[in-house]
Length: 595
Ligand SMILES: Nc1ncnc2c1ncn2[C@@H]1O[C@H](COP(=O)(O)OP(=O)(O)OP(=O)(O)O)[C@@H](O)[C@H]1O
Ligand SMILES: [Mg+2]
Image (cartoon, rainbow, N blue to C red; front, side, top):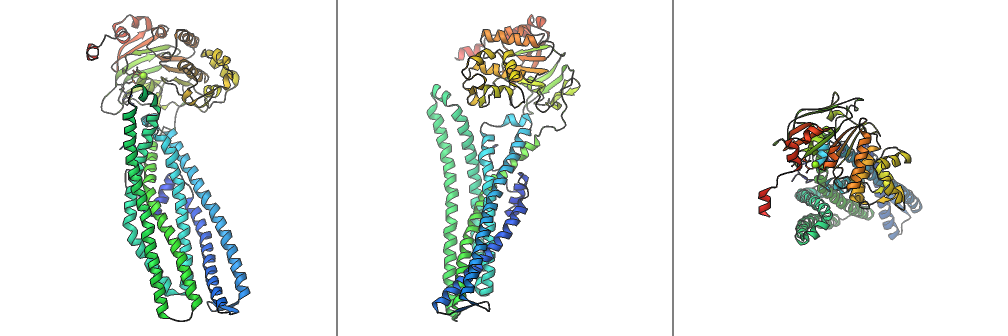
């Protein structure tokens, strides 16, 4: 499915592939940081190995009541050996502290860099890509999926540390007893080969889990927002059933994934311990009296096996996360492909709007706009009317440059609308959308909307939007918090707040999509006054079903099934047939009888 996070095979397998993927996701200088970590870890591993050799020799010497011990041909007194042990312990401790802090900082930095990359990619993507996103998908991507980045980096760092420690321990074991160390190496490789197929199953199971979790998350976001409607329509139970089915599917994937995860340590440990038993039997059968050396090798091998288990677990974890990372890079690719043009042009100082034979389709199969042509001189008020689905919002999106026409040109002055960008902190083009979305925060913050404006400017925008009086009557005034999605405000207040947000940027082109749909007569009258005040200074395009709003327009565009049914001075158009059809639709007899 389209939004699944797992779709294709990884670009490159193994650690190198993962590193490349992480770099693609914006995690910088990871190789350098991991190299640094490896060096410290190797030193720590050598210190640990030397310590284990000294400890076993010490234990054997004291058991045999000897005053000296011999390590690799060097004779040491008990005191010297203890002192050396303490120094090695200090090195081990210091290296451990350094690696702990380095590992956590590497994963933290990766989370930050990776998430910033995804945030930039999404917000820099074209509107056509952003508008397609399903509710909850981006949220899941930027929160949960980005955290996987940190988990992967943490696993890589842990795996690397285990690997280097095993190498250091085996190096020591080679020096003490090359045959046993060689045996450990061979068994390690055999174990790796034996567990390879399980890793491949893990990767597949994780891909399925990624897909199921993503679907579940998207569905939960959608359904929780619809809780009220489910209750009112009496469909709460079927909706819950849907969620239960999805949840069951996700839980089964989870179980499969975890089962494989738990299987590997059992197989690994059984084989590893079996090897120690066989190894000891071989050593015993060979005889000899190098008791200290034998004890040291056993200790080193046992420690190696513990770290080996870590490597195995990490390798499996990394395999299971490959699918998630591939999904992230795929989404990143999609956002980058739809990236807005960097070389944008500012809104010209003086401009008229021109639609020249514009056709448009959302999915390249069927045009929703056909050969639209009209012209609006600067400072005029254009009204767009038409039945639902006739293409009004689509025309407004082309005008705002949010989408590009399939054929023809949309020009603002002598610039195609899709090339026009707003400068930093100024909003010469403003939109009051059909369903305004408010931020969680104060009313003032919602009007300012990330622009550096003074309290006076905020209040005068609210005054112009005829919202100031109501805000002043609230106990906290402009500091009143509006809940998520603006729940503390009424529909009409929310719409007027959106108008204040648009006006504060002193727009020169203002587009309002159904601004009066949630307004009562008095508020609508006030909005008409606001628009009248802008006349001549601002080019205004207003989409409306309300006749009162339309009456004030200089020009009217009537759309019918994606075509221009009429266009011209308001009075002329209002007298025409197209306008009447659009505003007084004939009753649909089929719909009436079917009810
Ligand atoms: N994102 C989209 N993907 C595919 N088709 C779309 C999309 N948005 C709108 N359409 C289609 O384009 C046509 C015009 O839609 P548009 O939203 O412009 O209508 P509208 O006149 O604004 O309607 P309303 O008055 O209901 O808001 C409709 O047939 C609609 O189904
Ligand atoms: Mg619309």
